[in-house]
Amino acid sequence: MPELPEVEVIRLGLAPRLMERRFVRVTVGAKSLRRQSPVRELEHWLLGRKLTDLSRRGKYLVFALEGGVTLLVHLGMTGHLLLGSESKPLPQLDHIHLVFHLDNGLELIYQDIRRFGQVLVFPPGVPPAPLREVGREPFSRQVTPQWLSAQARGRSRPIKNFLLDGRILAGIGNIYACEILFAAGVHPATPAGRLSLKDWGRILKDTRRILKEAIRQGGTTVSNYLNSHGEAGLFQVQLLVYGKESEHCRRCGAPIVRLIQSGRSTFFCSKCQKMPD
DNA sequence: CACCCCACCTGCGTGC
DNA sequence: TGCACGCAGGTGGGGT
Image (tube, rainbow, N blue to C red):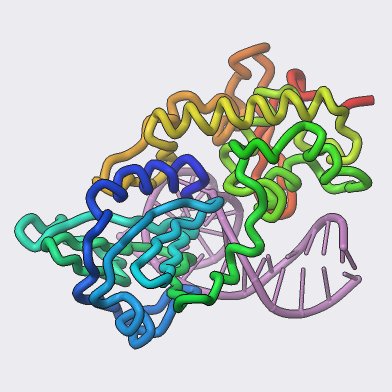
C-alpha cells in the first residue's frame, strides 16, 4: 500500500504528537504479522523509554528511543498507523494487531488487514538489519543521473523493475513507478542498461517532482490508505496511468495499456512511452 | 550474480 | 444469492 509519499505523510502526522512521549504499555493482538518482535522484547525495550526521533528510510518508519533503542515499522500493503486516545477512542476497527500506549493517554495503533507488515525492535548497538538493504533516498544528493546510469550498466531487467528495486532507489512502489515512467516518456519494458544519461536525467527529475507533489497532496488513496489521523490522500486525482487501463491517455488520447511485469501490473501509454531504438 | 516466481494474507469486484 | 476467480500500495526466500 504505502509507498514513500504515504509513509512520509504518516511520519509528518505522527512526529509532533509523539515526540518526547514515553511508552507505558504495549497491547498485542492474537494474530502476528509476517515479521514481528515477540511481546516480551517489545515490552522490555520500549516501556519507560521516550521517543527522541522519528525518521523514514524508504518505506520504513524508524522510531528512535532513549538509550539507542530502535523501533522499525513497515506497513506492507495494507498497514495503518493511527492515533487514538483513551478519552477519544477510534471507531471500532478490525485487524488491530498492536497498540502502543503513551504517557499522555495517546495510543499509537497498528492496524493491518493483510498482515504483510513488520514491527521490529532492536536493542542499543544493534543496527536494524532490514535497513542495511535499503537503497538511496530519491531526494539524496548522492542520487544523480550518473549514479543511476552506473547502477543500471549491464542490466537487462526492465526499467519498471529497476525502479521497484528498493535496494537501489528506496521507496518507489507500483503506483509511482508507473507514473514516473509515463511522465518521463519511457516504455516500462526498456532494459535499464539501455537508457541514456539524458533518459536518467528525466527519470530522476520526474521521480522527485511526482514524489514531492504526492507528499504535498497527502499521498495516494486508491483503496484504503489513510494517514495517521484516519484521512485519505488526494494524489489519486493526479494519477495519469495507474489503474487507468483502456482509458484515454491524457496527453495523446491513445488507450492506456496494462501489462504484467514480474507478476505486477504496469500501466502505460504505448504511444507516449517508446523504447529507445 | 541477476533475474523471476510465488508465497505470505484478507477483502472486494466481476462474471457465471 | 452463491461461488470461483482475479486482483490489490509490500517484501523475501528459493529456483533457474
